[in-house]
Amino acid sequence: MQVKLASHCSYRIRYHMVFVIKYRKDLIDDELRQCIENISKGIQERYFLNFHAIGMDENHMHLLVEAPPRYAPSRIMQIYKSIIAKQIFKQLPHVREELWGGHFWTAGGHIDTVGDGYGEKQMKNYIQNQGRDMGQLKLLDFSE
Picture (cartoon, rainbow, N blue to C red):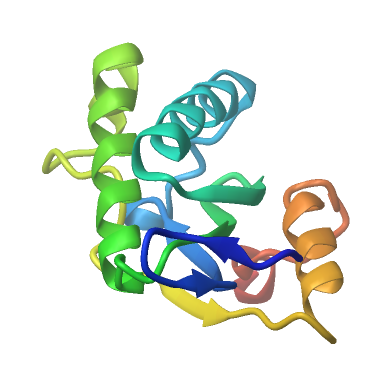
């Protein structure tokens, strides 16, 4: 990955973030996936973020994002989660009916840093292949 230049610094900062849908509801289908991808393009342009990979399973999503140092990782998460939630509720009002309480995401999330050597390619591959392994065990499979 190349070093990016800002007005008074250079940087190369990437984060792996995971967001979970409230109540772990399996809501991400093709329509919602397309909606999230379209909204993400607008966020990327407006906030000068660079999404290297976006991957989704039925109830959570992974994001590999490059960001300038002016944004703390928690701020990136806040920006992304709030805009995505507002736009989904606006564009797909039927999704709000599935989530009582008016929240799309859980309160927390996961943030990891990703380096240049080991990790970036593997992380990108992992994120891009989310939701494609239908043979993967789910938590409900263990309780039966």
